[in-house]
Length: 100
Image (tube, rainbow, N blue to C red):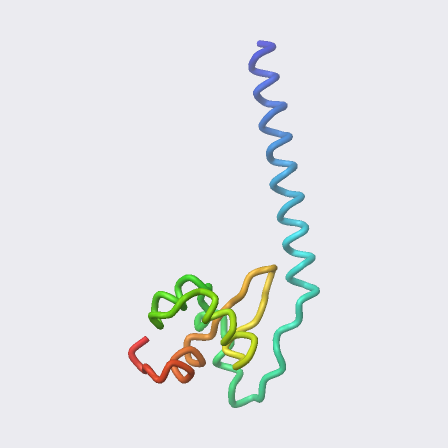
């Protein structure tokens, strides 16, 4: 019985750490505004058009640092929740490959 209670206590503590991490992530996301975009470009940043840096690099056939540079220099994405999100339509235009 004591071992079971100990396991339950460990699980509760692990759940608390996870919840603390989620609360911090939520706070980060709320404080990071989306980039300024014209109404015509709004669809570029729709949730269904966003991918992570690794996926963008793989699709475009370039390195992750290149994608990060394009996000910074060419506004093909933005940071959300501490992670970079890349717009697929903007990645296509930047790379010149409509098949991405």
